[in-house]
Each structure stands twice: as structure tokens, then as C-alpha cells.
Length: 148
Image (cartoon, rainbow, N blue to C red; front, side, top):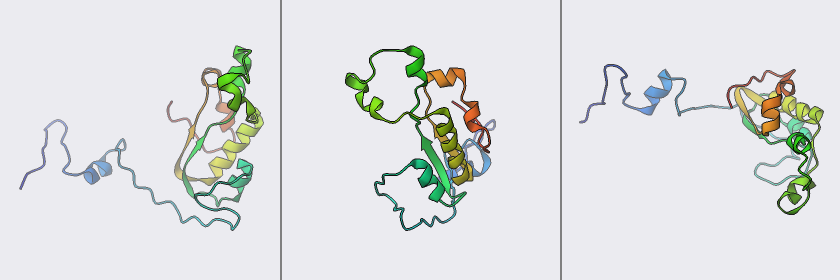
């Protein structure tokens, strides 16, 4: 029977469970979100066409462990004034309805309401907003910036 490898400076645990229980930076995370009961109009793993804010409002509070949000905003497009909007590779993106700062903040507040206390929002932002600020989008939420 092999013995677990240890090191006097930094002992290596015998299992990942031991590591997870001692280290907050572990790659092991076991989250048990509360059961999710959806209204009849919402279906899991099905394509739906509706305003995302209505979808979020229909979800029970504090039930979602993670959300990904990639808002359609004009920040970098307006700042850079490329002049090639709607041509070739940008056609599909330009066809999407652009979100105002207020709509983005509304989405983030709605996401905050459905996230479990240890949940995470992965927010995609462009370099314009990264450099010029997006903190006001988080006003009125319990969300905080963790890292880039």
C-alpha cells in the first residue's frame, strides 16, 4: 500500500477532498443549490424567445449558482468610430439590439436576485468599459468585483 507523499514545507494531501477542505483556492467546489421549480411557461434545456429580464423575474430568488452575461453595448464602437458597422464580419453583431447603460444595470440587478449567496456572475465587457468603468452597473446589488 502506497503512502501519501508529503513535504515538510507544503504537505500534499492524500486526496482532493482533503485539499478542498483546507484550501479556499481549490479546484474542487461542491455547491448544492436549492431545488429549482420553474413556472410552467419556462422549460429547462429548451430554446425560448423572451426578454431576458422577464426570464430572470420568473426565476425563484437565490436559486442559480452561476450566470454568464454578455451585454450588447455600444461603448467601444461609439468611442472608436470604426465606420464599418454592418459590413462583413460585424453584420450579425450590429443586427442585435443594443442595450443602454440602464438596461444593463437592470439585468445585473435581476441576476443578483437569482444568484445563490456564493454564486458568481461572469460579466463580459469590452476594453472601453474595462478602462472607463462599469462599477455603477453593480449599484444596488450584493455583487462585488472579484477579479478580471
